[in-house]
Image (cartoon, rainbow, N blue to C red; front, side, top):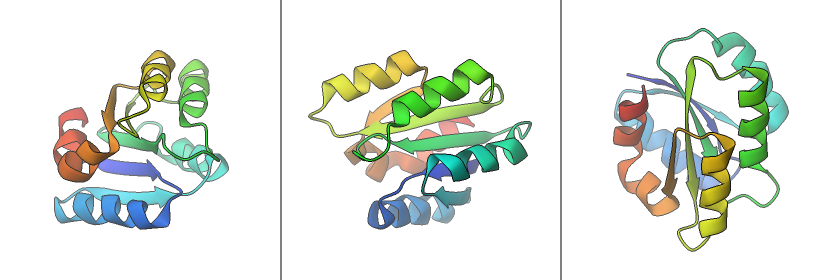
Length: 122
């Protein structure tokens, strides 16, 4: 199973994501901001099977810019990325794909298939 770092500031949806991933046997850590994420990535940098899940629906967090920056810094070389967005916001999806996410899915699919999506990336 995967080690998951979940950058999901929304506590309600974050708890839902965490619960479904834990139930499937994944190890999950919820992270609320970019600073905490960068700190945890330092510790997880060489960990095989780590997946970074990013909430792209949060207006206070630019998940695409964060991932693009981390990719540019080489901080995600061993870490796969999964972003989720509002299904009505195609521009967010396109921006996330350009930023270098491995997989970008609608929030509803993340809620339904989160454990399987993470497993496919790990």
